[in-house]
Image (tube, rainbow, N blue to C red):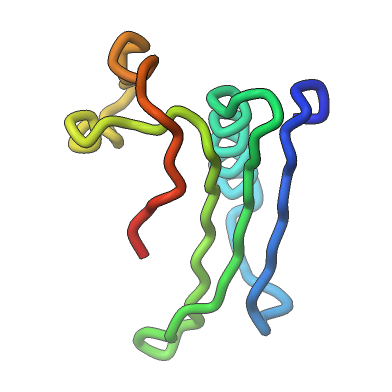
Length: 105
């Protein structure tokens, strides 16, 4: 991100000091998300990595992790394919769209 002048913001809004995770999977997931965010964010753009507490469920702690950027985004038509293995939206569909910061809560 430094090479492309992308501003990286890390924000932690939680009272939780420690969580138990599969370190390998955790690193893979967030490295992939952050890599894609950096790849599709324009020079001088912003990539945010956000941690926040959410209400607990079934006596389990709630944490939401978000990677947010102002890159080209995805079309609404592509969203049903978001978790298809090896899927990627064709570039011609994303080239002309403006970056957005809107995402569901």
